[in-house]
Length: 288
Ligand SMILES: Cc1cc2nc3c(=O)[nH]c(=O)nc-3n(C[C@@H](O)[C@@H](O)[C@H](O)COP(=O)(O)OP(=O)(O)OC[C@H]3O[C@@H](n4cnc5c(N)ncnc54)[C@H](O)[C@@H]3O)c2cc1C
Image (cartoon, rainbow, N blue to C red; front, side):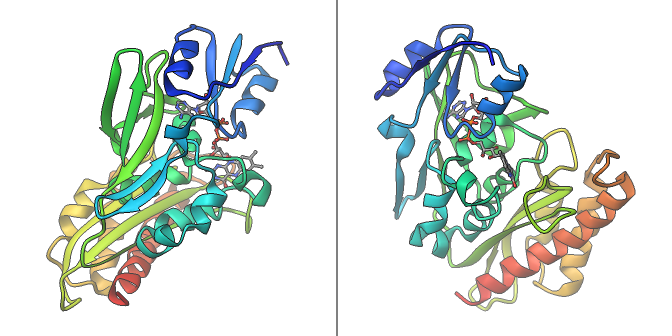
């Protein structure tokens, strides 16, 4: 591994100043970055540890929704009772990223900023309506999670800019969410398909008021399946509805062939997973 300077600022402004250096990189849990530095995929003269910055460690639930600091690790997310009750898709995803050691370091912010096509958290963040709050030399800006990734390992972050936190709206009424992926092994593998969904039902539980489906590993970046969302609004939460939602999802994806699965396999699995994830999200919502 090439030598680099290690900095560990305790303020957001301090980190932004250090990151204005063209060969600098933020380090959260380091579960992607250290490997990329070691293998030369990423080259940095300065590595800026962001774990000590208070704004990036916020984990706050209120009537305004959830504020999730970009550096909060998966383990702390899983252990949070408000997240378990109100944003179960977030718990679903954080409990399957790596094992306990990885979850104790890895952040959802890092997972999103690494911007892998098969990153597990991104479809769940999209389904939950997450909004990225970015901070950089030119000030702060906000962007929905579905507009953050622009291609494999690419995103909208500018030099010196950090993902500060992700905010999620407060779930309304009878609503819930779920994330599930297909992997060839039971654990510790990369998603062949990943699906996140949130579903809101009316008071009777017989009509879907709104739904959001995020799809991962089936296109260059995870994306919001808007046609599926449009189809679901106003429908009954039945097996037929969710089967058709899966069929529509199939028509939106552009999967690749690789050693984990063929294009045809991914097309098939996407339909199956969309149906199962929506069914589970609706079942959870009905129990509210
Ligand atoms: C054994 C193992 C198993 C894994 N299993 C899974 C899995 O099942 N599913 C899955 O999706 N991933 C998996 N991963 C990858 C997962 O651990 C990472 O994607 C992790 O979530 C990244 O978070 P981090 O805090 O470690 O980020 P880091 O590695 O510190 O950073 C990742 C990238 O994001 C940038 N970055 C980090 N934070 C910010 C920020 N706030 N603002 C701007 N840029 C930032 C860094 O510069 C770097 O480019 C696994 C990794 C390992 C080693």
